[in-house]
Amino acid sequence: MKRFFVLAIVLILAVSLIAGALFLIIIAPAPFSMRVIPENTMDSIAGQRCVFLVTVADEGQGSGGGEAVDITATAPGAAVTVEPQAITPGQVAEITVIPDKASTGETLIVNIKGERDGLTQTEMSTIVVWVGEDTLEPYATDVRDRFIPWLAANYSELGITTETEWTGTVVRPRILVVTHYLFFSENWEMGVSWHVTIPPHDWTRIYLRHRATEVSPSYAFEISSLDAQEDPHAIDPKDAFAESVWR
Image (cartoon, rainbow, N blue to C red; front, side, top):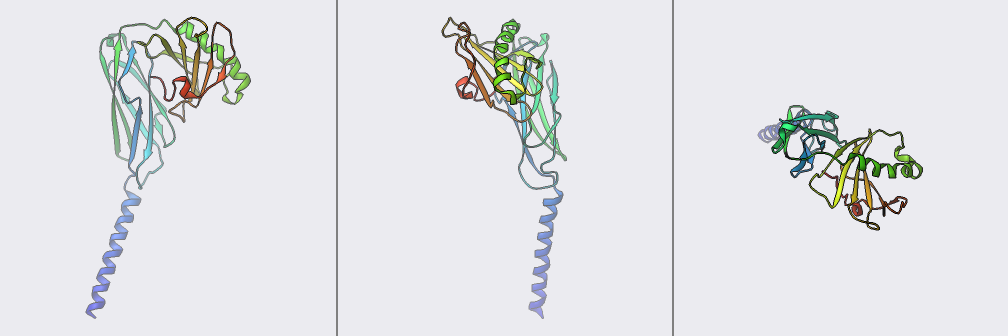
């Protein structure tokens, strides 16, 4: 009888422990991690669109796993937008920080927070605002437009045509030998670069990153010489110096 009583107590304790563990798994919020790109300090000038990419990932079981994480950001001395303001694992949010003129010569602190079911993750990034102005947009636009009719004819699945609307911004303002510029359409980030030299070494390259789902470029193309009026051709993103996005 005593042995039976001991076994019953052990069984009750085991069931209680299992029930408690199941309760924690089902009721406790699922933990998550947050990644911000780039991780290093970004150089900029006043008026530049500094675009950070944010992704999240589930890191355990619990309630809310796989559901959206709310993303917010602040940066004193700059205008800040977050789009979209909530993402699930596999999606990408863009935080756009535009330093104002009064921030020239300063280092801006960007605070980024992800929140879900009472759990939070925070990251801090920095932007150094240098003296300068964007004088590159007209030329960068011309270079971009050398690729677009060819893309429309040869990569129609991308949905890029001469009617596609783009918003441009200078990027890496202190690099001169190879000059960079970014354009954003509704669906794509396009990085444009060109070699500042004489023919036949006057190449130009672009990369494409799908904004809602990618943190790295999935396409890249090159015109080997602008002066020679050559047609674009596809290249590996690594060969376009675009293993990651330019920032």
